[in-house]
Image (cartoon, rainbow, N blue to C red; front, side, top):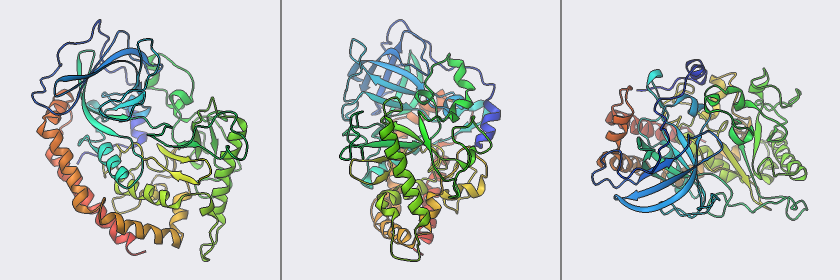
Amino acid sequence: MLKIKSFFLFFLFTALISCSKEDPSPSSEAPTIFAVETANSEIPYLQISTKTDILNEPKVAASMTVYVHKKKVLDSPIGIEYRGSTSYRISDKKSFGIETRDLSGAAVNLSVLGFPAESDWILTGDVFKASDNIIFDPSLMHHYIGYDWYAKMGHYASRSKFVELEVNGVYLGVYVFMEKLKRGSDRINVKKLVATDTDAATISGGYILKIDKTSGSEVGSSHPLDYYLNNWDDDCRYTAQNSFRSDYDIFGQPMNAAPYGAPYSPQKYLETYFLYDYPKAENINDAQKNYIQTYIHNFETALLTDDFSTDSRSYTNYIDRASFIDFFIINEVCGNVDGYRLSTYMHKERGEKLKMGPIWDLNIGFNLQDRVPFNDWIINYNTYVTADAWMVPFWWKRLMEDPQFRTELKARWIVLRSNVLSSSNVLALTDMTSSYLTTNDAIKRNYTKWTGINVDYNSSMTELKAYLRNRLDWMDSKILGY
């Protein structure tokens, strides 16, 4: 089985990486034929053409043509940029951020591939670097199947479809075209919060927070492309403008050291920062910052001080416990080693409690990692990795100490195992997805493009399905005993 190297090995391997020779150069005009023969493939084919080099930011002007069954269904101006922090550095197969635009260059909402009209989209490529034998997801389906399950559990998840991508005449393989997580009636549906929303009736929502690395817009500056190959410090530049810190460390003890230290300071592993995702850091005002900071503090304090030997709970005044349970379940089923500590979204609607989600970024999961044993909870990450810059907050182990939380978790698990997460349904989606990619020869084309790592796709699928069977059975053994 292909295993993923730890973050620290990534750092050593990639500190001196130069620009990938696979990066497509700009062309003078859009290509008129596909870069590969797709025969009768049902998978949509995207051609993107730029006149200047693609940057990490800002987005550069480009055009995008979408074909379905080789018939043009969309032709639009776009803006495009590379996206990802660690993944950008360690992968030859880059991911992209897309903004659909009008002829004047302004963002415009468009329906792409049948999704609700919006302007912000993502083309996610699986992390692949042959020179270091790094591959996160040989199945190409981690995001797709995880988001599908979460949506069927009753939550918003980024709508996603497989596509084959060509940029400036260069075929780049199989990608997942998906919605960018953002506020909106068809995405994270919280009310719009503007600067004047500071009274008691409006200040309670909506907010979107995330626990994540800082990069890109959070850092607030653009650089030459080669800068982003080694800008590790930018992953850890927390400031009072872009974030706030929990008042408690990862063990639930009060934090005494001052926040916003230098990147990777000795205390960083103890800290949990919440990034302002909506309103954006440049838009959220002091009153709104104070509100959401106080709300999180009061929740954390209640969670730590509630007496779980009694029937009374105060932490449930602040959170929608059902959303926390589903967030726990999906991360644990997917073995998401980045779960809870990175790419972790939460949102608060006006007048409502804090909810976890949507789920995001599942590429390092499904037992293709070496940090948490197969037969343990991902929330116990801190037991096995003692000083990562990003650790799991105390919330999850504390919640699992609550008999009421465990009882509700058990009840929800029993329901999900009878439908969405039954072994037969889980394996059926996996088989259907694999069949879709192989029957249309997309897997063959992808691994003809991306070579140098011995990927036996059939073996990868056998291992993925074995993992899912064993993980579901193991979770049964734990949860049904509560």
